Structures are given as C-alpha cells and as structure tokens.
Amino acid sequence: MALITDWIRPLYNPKFPHSQSQLHQSKMSLSLRPAGFINPISSSINPYSAIHLKSNSIQINAQREDFFGEEAKPFVSEATNPEPEVFAWSSAILPFLFPALGGLLFGYDIGATSGATISIQSPELSGTTWFNLSAIQLGLVVSGSLYGALCGSILAYPIADFLGRKRELIIASMLYVLGGVLTAYAPGLGILLTGRLLYGLGIGLAMHGAPLYIAETCPTQIRGTLISLKELFIVLGILLGYLVGSLEINVVGGWRYMFGLSVPIALVMGLGMWSLPPSPRWLLLRAVQGKGLLQEYKEKAITALSKLRGRAAGDKLSERQIEETFVSLKSAYMDQESEGSFFEVFQGPSLKAFIIGGGLVLFQQITGQPSVLYYAGPILQSAGFSAASDATRVSVVVGLFKLVMTGIAVLKVDDLGRRPLLIGGVSGIALSLFLLSAYYKILGGFPFVAVAALLLYVGSYQVSFGPISWLMVSEIFPLRTRGRGISLAVLTNFGSNAIVTFAFSPLKELLGAENLFFIFGVIALLSLLFIILLVPETKGLSLEEIESKILK
Image (cartoon, rainbow, N blue to C red; front, top):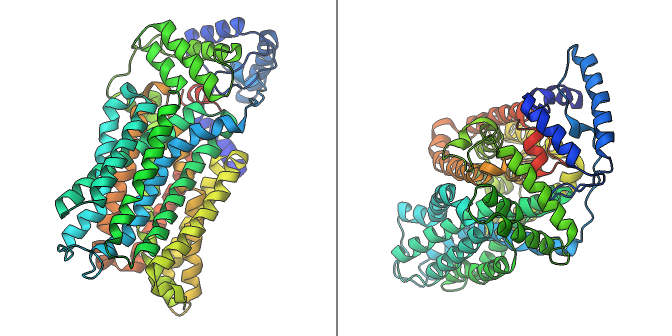
C-alpha cells in the first residue's frame, strides 16, 4: 500500500511554483533569509544557508529532470532539513485545554441526553407535570442541540474571521452557560427547548473555533497530537455524561442535574479563554487585510506568540518568527484582494481543501457512525452480556472502549501520520459493517461475531474518522479562508449527522438491518478510495507549508 500511495501522492500534491513570478519570489525570499533562520510560528530551524539551499535545489531539479524526462520547475524548500522547535509542554497545555473544553461539553451533551430522556419521561422521577412527551416533542428535546449546532455553523461562516478564534470561543462558552442554565431550571417544555437550542449554538461555534485556535497556536510537531487529543476530550465528555446519567437516573428531577453540570465547566472554559492571547496567525491575517495599523497588529502578534511559547515578552525569537510569517502571508496575497470574497472557499486552493476536509467529515457520518451504536445494547444482549440489560452501563462500557482507542490515535498520529491511521481505520470500519450485515442475515447463531464487529467498528472509528477528520479540517485550509472553510466543514458534519440520524429508522424498516449495514459498508469502501486518492499526508508540515506545498 505504501508503494501505491507514494506513486499517487505526487498527482495531488504538486510542489512546484506555477509561474515565473512565483519563482522569482521564491528566489527573493531565499536571498533575504539568513542561515539558521526559524520558520514562522511552527519554528522549524533551518540549518542551511541560502547558498546551500540554492545549491541543493539545483541538484534536486537535475534529478527531477532525469526522472520526468523534461525540465522540472525548482522548489527550493525541498532541500531544507528542518529541525523541530524546542518548546515547553507547560506552555502548550493551557492554550489547548481551554478550547478543548468546548469539545468536552459537546460530548457531555451527547452522553447526558441519553440518560436525561429516560429521566424526563418518568412519571415518578421527572418531577414535572409535563412528563408525558409525544414522540415529536421527545425528538425535539434530543435533537434540539443538533439544530442549534447547525445554526451555529451557519453563523460562524460570515463572522468567524471578524471575531477571531478567541472571542468566538468566549461567546461559545457564554452560550453553553446560558443554555445549560435554561435547560436545568426549565419550568416548561418551551424553555427547555430554547435552552437546548442555545446550547447547540455554543456547540457549533466551539467545534469551529477550538480546532482553529489549537492548530494556529501550537508547535507544528505536536499539532496532530493536540487536535486529536481534542477528540479524546469529546469522548471524555460522552463518558462523563454517561456516568452522571447513571448516578442521577434514580433521583427525582435527575435530568436537571444532568444538563446543569455543564454550566461550571463552561464557566471554566470562558474564563480560561479570556486569559489566553489571540491567535498570532489571525492577528497577522487582519494586518494583511488592512483591518488596522500594521505595526500595532504585528506587536500584538509578537506578544501573543511570546506568551504562547512561555518566553519573555517581545523576545527576539518571537519577533523574527512573526516577521517571517508576515512576509510569507503578504507575498502569498500580494496579487489578490486584501480580503477573500464570500464565495472564495469554493475556488482554487480553498476548493481543494474543502473537498478534502468536507469529504472526510461527510464520510465520517454517512458510513453509519450515528447509527451503529444504536445496536450496541441488542448486540451485547444477544451475546449474553448481563450488563446489556442496563442501557446506562452498556453506554459506559462502550464509552471506556472509545476512550482507550482514541488514546491510541493521540499517541500515534504524529508518529505514523494521518494517512496510515485513516487507511487502516476505515478498512476496519468497512470490514465491521460487512460482518454486522452478515450477522443479521446468515450468522445470527454466532453472537460473538456481532460483538467482535461492534468493537471493531468502534475501535476503527476512534483511530481514524473520529480524531483524524477534525485534525485534517483544522490544518488543510489556507489561512485566507480557514475560518469560512472550517465553518462549512462543521456545517457538513452536523448536517450529514442530522440526515443519517433521521433517515436511519425509516431505512431500517424499509431495507432491514442486514441490507442497511451492507450499504454502509459499500460507502466505507468508497471513503477508503477517496482517502487513498485525494487525502494528503500533513505530518510534520507547518500550516504555511501545507498551504504552499499541497494546495498549490
């Protein structure tokens, strides 16, 4: 497989300047770049001088000419041998932790809602006079946050770059608090649904802003680990919601405690984001777009980067990194409008990024992720697991397994890379879906097959689509359209989730479980082909390198 992907990757990962003007700019930037200069924000140390770079570039181009049988355009950065930035983990923890709490609150809502829907419908335990909810009313309670997340994703598209990543996450935390309070103290169904909608708005903004902030502020060599760790926080949130539900399920009005526990976590998130600096890359983007005094934005970016790396305010290293990043951004956009148009995300490099990122989050949902776990209880019951009689206990068991597998992905994503985890994990997803189809069709007498398939699906998803899709979305878009691009990817994710969730029951009745899982398996094979042909490897590349090497 490695040989196949190595052959395919050059088809979609061109690394050459496309015009004489770009070639001239590359030579100019080299002549101005001193030996040992440090790459912007990602801070990869370049041990070569400009002369060595040009010399190596000539050698590389000669090799390319021999290989392709024609003159190849020079690409100087291939001759570099970057070394990872030296940083303190202590300075990277808080800029990751507080945005990641937005993901934890998203997961908590998923877990807590499963127990809250049982509690709120109980005549003895709901503590209300309106416990007898219709199917439509219950569906609105369950999916209210999903509708809110869809609205939040749409809202983020036009305003995200104006607000900035920090303010967007602060607003998300405020919506979490307001939604949690209204839901916990709701005197009637109308207030409860309003609270669910507001909480969902917070989810939409948080799931957009958190990967943006983390990707733009963390060192390059741990970007994959930290963004994947955000997925671990989502799973932790789901598990926390399951645990709270199991503890409060027999308490009168327990659903209020389940929903209300999100409020103190959201307060910590908001106060933490208030203490963090804005994204240096966002500040420089605003400077390039002419949204304020150039020197003022650059000074703010230097101060922000110094704080993020735990250095003294205004240190020379941060100043050089910011200056190099600014030159790179200005050079990239000098022949374009200062600010991207509303529809630019559907053009050129941004469209390519959206096909990659949007395609991953779409396949993440339409391979059956919202549906397969609905069968966890019946599958475990058929295998004779006593814990399956208690839905909350089964949920905790599955949640713990998800947590372990996500932890494996977090530990390996920056070592193995994105593509190997995606290819291996999605292959496991396809196999598990075909096994589930076979179980419901011809292997009903072998329940261990269903249990193995269920665990294979959960494990494969958590090392591939679960963390890697959001990682790729956060790093693949050009800075110029990153805010809008990620908002569209988040919208694609929640929209496809809603479609699969609402279509699952009628499709199950129409086709039967065996045929539905078979269809999901075929879609998983198509997603595997999509990954092999179109999804690039971004391990070890700074965000600027991804933009210049992969998207152009």
